[in-house]
Image (cartoon, rainbow, N blue to C red):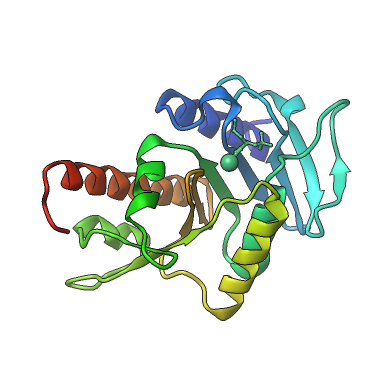
Length: 206
Ligand SMILES: CSCCC(=O)C(=O)COP(=O)(O)O
Ligand SMILES: [Zn+2]
């Protein structure tokens, strides 16, 4: 059970819940296996107390392979499926709803949020001296399939330079090749969001 991805996902969810990023059942987490299936949180479950019965196994077409009674996959599973399809080394995906991520959506221009040129960007795979890096920002649609379609279109053109994407007035999604890397990527993006909000309050140009 120790190496069961569901155990790692539940631990990550408790951590993110404690940070205020997964309140009121918000967010969803997934981990891909070698067999082209992924475990994803069931829809509408409280993220501070996930158990094995709160995860659904789905295939790359979004079809349910294994589900505990009464559980449906996250309503946002199509977004995870889209990311796994486009990003070959993404094996873990974390989607959370922080206040700062949602405030930062207001700073986006033309579907892009310019990240602050911080040393921290190295942890997102950007080693440049004076980085000029944008995070893609997608419109939030009631129909999640439309968000996934927008992401599919964008990622078909080019993958983002950093392992993440923002959905306006909704939350951020970050990914990585393993649990630790995905968590670091999420933490670094959330750090950037906090920085941008504080910089705005202090009227510091970024
Ligand atoms: C209360 S959060 C609204 C839905 C959402 O955006 C989310 O991340 C959780 O949806 P899920 O179906 O994965 O529970
Ligand atoms: Zn969400």
